[in-house]
Image (cartoon, rainbow, N blue to C red; front, side):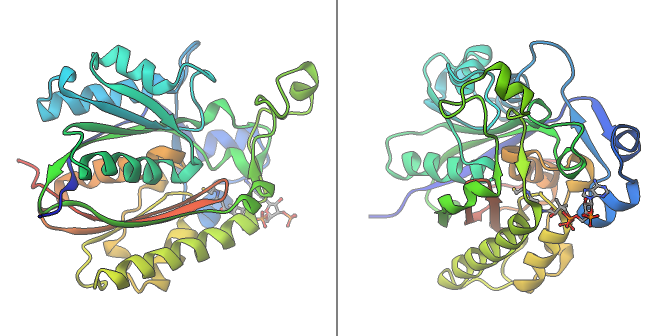
Length: 332
Ligand code: COA
């Protein structure tokens, strides 16, 4: 029997209007455009301003655009998975809120949390439903309002993150789509990148607020090292077992956490930087949104049959690589 793959048949991205530049950050913390640019490659990031605007606002815009550009009837969507670590609320899931606002009345929906690897984990999960033949139209969203959990007095983290969302439509194909993947988790990573307060471990209290436990904490150096070795390892394994070389792969699509991490992973896999998607300078690290925002930014340059390697690393630790055969040429 022939195999069914989950093909991406559309992608859309959304970032909010407000641009937080390195120059503005220079006025908020003791930092400089030179330090941020040379250590991370980031020049600016987008921030969702306004009260009572959660991650769902970003996801809704991405999904609305996706439905419109693919001419998809919202009622035909059977499942929507939203990867996020900045859900609007503990419950209901942000995926439910996105579905309600975009007319997905027939879909069941859930959130998936794997930090910066969230989109890769969600894409893998969603693709199994298509490959199994039980679902025909599935949406995967990666969305994060990182500004909600960033401490803008901590110069080591506030320069890194931004807000954004991306969404892809998955449909069955006999030829294109998610061909293979390798994902990993290692709980030892909990000590290096976390947000301590607000969950059942330290429920919100005056004390957790005073101790700044509702913000991201990161020990950058061990995260940097683990990200480089984790992503390099899975990229080489996925490429080797699929007979891929850096000639036969059109694009490396890495999580956008730090330009130096991206450059090191690319060089370890012998990828010329011209074949690596990099947009970190515009958005910073948007966590679950980085990969779909890359696909969205590069959509017009992708061709049917292109081999893509997606890779990500995030809190947890979580990491992985995924081999995707692109399914369409963008109509001009
Ligand atoms: N501006 C100026 N100086 C800063 C700064 C900033 N924004 N942030 C930190 N520094 C200082 C530090 O205080 C330190 O000063 P010291 O030597 O006097 O103590 C110095 O710069 C070096 O800090 P360090 O943390 O060693 O820098 P780094 O080269 O490791 O870069 C990161 C820091 C965060 C950019 C880098 O470690 C990183 O990108 N890590 C991985 C991030 C990541 O991938 N996170 C998400 C996973 S998905």
